[in-house]
Image: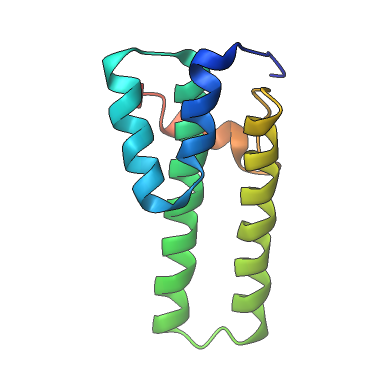
Length: 109
């Protein structure tokens, strides 16, 4: 999935990766004028946010130690790869879980 897009959805796609507030703003902006490129990156970021929350909750419940740090670092790397893809104007899936994020959150437009 390495399609490219114009600037219309690119800005929304980039905003989606800028904190949770940026994610919410991207959803609101994409609701006024739907763009498949923006929706793609919103779904990717939604998956990353939920993955990060799951790791945080799991770390609170169970002392994960170094494993928790490694998992958090892994999410950070996925976020950087998704953000770079959005900046480059590509619909590039984040490694490992990107395809699942698109399937699981296909209702997010």
